[in-house]
Structure formats: structure tokens, C-alpha cells
Length: 86
Image 1: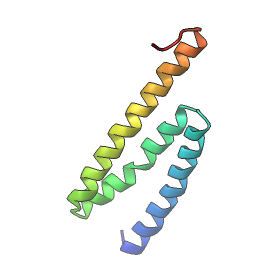
Image 2: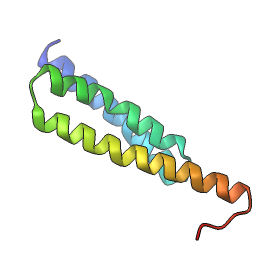
Image 3: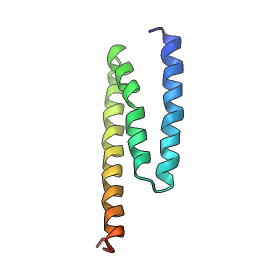
Image 4: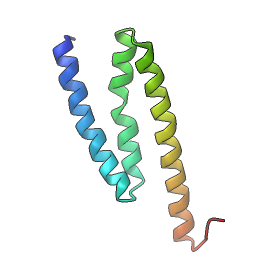
């Protein structure tokens, strides 16, 4: 894949990522899932283009986004069950 193709692919994925963040900001847990999935091409790019800093960045963001998604899901379940987090 050419650098130009990668540039436009990654730009398109950022549009998807921003959309996921929009939904996460609306307290929809699956917004985090969209954000997590949108980072996959960044990870592939980093590995195929020997960009170790990008690999580390992708892993860091995956960890944060997974944590947020799991936490929001748990809080959503607690809220529906009428429980208060303490």
C-alpha cells in the first residue's frame, strides 16, 4: 500500500474514531468499542512500517479505551439494577 493510501485510510479511520468518541460522550458504552476498533489500522500501519512508537501508542490507547468501556458497562448495569457505586 502506498503512503498516500495509508494516509487516507488512517484519516478515514480517525473520522470513525471521532464518531466513537461522540457516542462515548453521550454515555453510550459502545462508543468506546468503535474507538477501540478504529485503532486497528494504526496498529497494522505501525507494525508494517516499523514504527515502534506507534505500536506503543496503540497499545496504550487500547488499554485506556478497554478500561473505559468495561467501566461504563459496569456502571450502566449497576444503574439499571438500582445500585449505587460506593
